[in-house]
Image 1: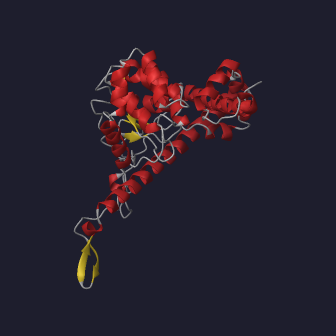
Image 2: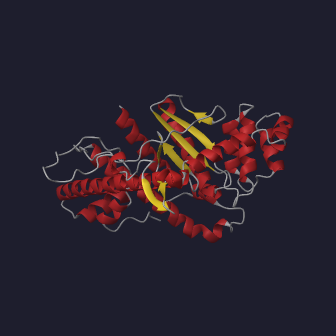
Image 3: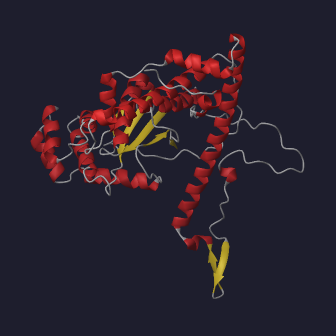
Length: 367
């Protein structure tokens, strides 16, 4: 079975969601008598000074500061969402145009239409998933009440093929751009980097102080986080010491009753030097996050299970999980997995390919 391919150039370009870092060049000077467009997120702000009088009540003035910190945080979040959306939309439009022109050029040389060229090139890269790959994919996303693999096999094959087609399209278009002279001069209107603490108890990979730091907020019972864990392992292996990876907890307690316990267990294992090993065990068996299973994982890892059991039972790492949860909430995170790359939220698909593209863009920007 062949991987389904985009039927047109427009469809192929649409799957390219790589967000590149824009340079902060100013562009053309503003002509006299015209309004200057905002060149940064800060310039786009509608913020008012705290002492601005916004109304009155019984003759007494009401100032902006009287409306509380909730308004300030809501305005900040709205501004950042707007700036990131504008930056991403402009970047996608630019990259889409570049890809379209490069494909037209390559197709012209080959004497075929752009659609034919794209389908032929992606066809060369198409590989159907093996039974082992299909089983591994199913195991990584299935919830506890999942039907047998045979009942959902066709749907999973389609999902895997679609994901591979998108990955192939990104790779193909990336190669075209790498071989061309492409200069980007859009103003950088992205929201400013967030200051995200990485406490001592945080699980880390890579080198502290690396040019790029990726912070993930995740939930051990979330099936999407399990796939993200696979992506993070692959990325850590790919980038080595060039990128620092950090894992912070964001258990969605209202829908995942075992997530908080699992997070505490991983932190407890970290006290015995086995955070990442327990992290991988928990994500590898999301339907077995009860205390007995977690202690069995600890035994398999060679941990002192008495200490592990005491640590979990006494909530010795509960404050660590709570601190992570509070920071996630303060950052406006609403779901998992959520990634921040050098303090900026990753807006795209949290797949290995999409995260790698964002990391590469950040590394290039800092070189």
